[in-house]
Image (tube, rainbow, N blue to C red; front, side, top):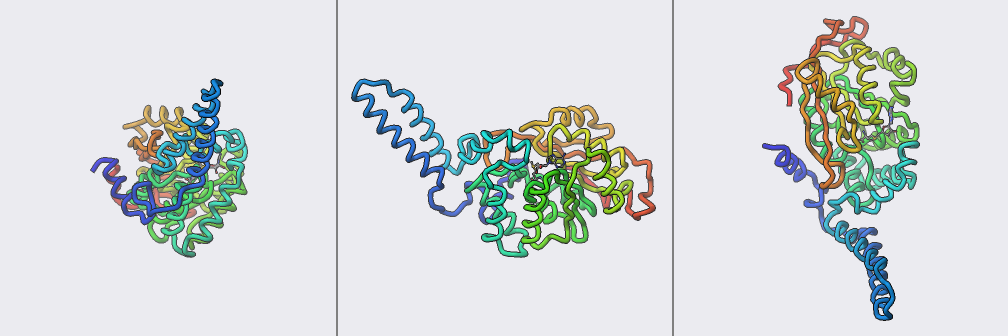
Length: 346
Ligand SMILES: C[S@@+](CC[C@H](N)C(=O)[O-])C[C@H]1O[C@@H](n2cnc3c(N)ncnc32)[C@H](O)[C@@H]1O
């Protein structure tokens, strides 16, 4: 089964998921607004043309509004034509500074989960977030298509201890928790306390608050967060089975090197990295390509940017090969240095 068949199968399993499987819904505000703006601009353009006046700017507006309306009606396959995505790109400066779009959509997503997902039901929380992102507001979480790649990596790794870099609103953490074995634990590192609070709220609502620890900080903060993970969370040599990297793109390589310096990985540990093509982590791609077949073995998953099906993206799934110097594991924590079972690789 190739990647597309695989994804199609996973998508059809969702109750409310991608544009194909969705039940009938009322027209989106974006569709109504685009139709209104396009119609008004069209009337003005016709009126001006009748009077022999220039009307091309109005026809351009009609064309733009029609493109947005068709995209909304077709299930929003072109992310750049979604109003919530246009708003996100317009607010990119704010997003990269605060790690929130600036229109309250992250909080609105948590409210949506509280009011639309069954408490204590992790599947329903994931479904409600996907529903919010497809129908209401675009969010920069890993999304359902790339999320399925992450799910499969977690299933393959059968991890006991997982580290995530970049919690945002807690969506990928939910997917990791759902796929990891019972008894496993996730630590999710997030630089923004506001995002960490939203993520915690979502995790609590989904009933998985005890399976994940929110760590507010970042690995490059001069040792504070690494020390906390070592001392408070008992991170030790060879103790991490899976890492999901999904934070500041320029920190992918430095943070991976920090993890390696600590000796937290063991042969067979899996590292999954999102957004390698878009917005892009070229240093990380180069790092993994140059080491492929040596200390890493990498599979490149060609996929799409979240919540649309036009813009391509790349997710890397890399298996660490090099033996750790710790050998039998960390004597202090008793964590093993070998993978939990045969890892057939992707
Ligand atoms: C793309 S979002 C993560 C999406 C999330 N993994 C998901 O799929 O649901 C990136 C997040 O990384 C956080 N972040 C940025 N730089 C960071 C750093 N150096 N360490 C930890 N988190 C960081 C941002 O605040 C933001 O919430």
